[in-house]
Image (tube, rainbow, N blue to C red; front, side):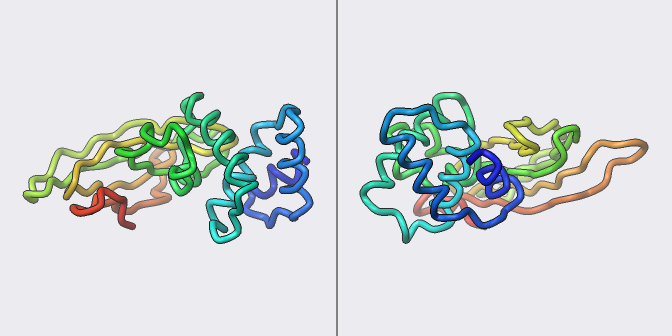
Length: 178
């Protein structure tokens, strides 16, 4: 179960329906569900929200609340925040998520552009290792602000640019725009 869940979560392989059913069954009988299984379950339903039925909502809520209580913030959790009873912990958050080797030391370089066009200075900070080679940097953006960033993996000599992007907060809904 954990092997299949790890492959689905960390390596983006397809998770078999039987694995999802077993995770749900373990939860329903009060058994301990390994964290990687909970994450694979949440990731699957974040990517396949149209498949969420009443039975899954209870499992998703329990798994989500547990992750958020432990301070785990990932993009797949952001996509399911409406199912969490503690969703207020995510409401004003924007995340940059980066996947790398667990021994990596990714550094995010970013600046914030205000609604009025004012640009902050570039800031460089290490990204937080959440688990299994997933690194996250959390931001609070106000309506109309955008964040421009790039990620460099620290290594021998100069680092290498590996990811870049922009996150913007929409004025009307307060949601992230790609």
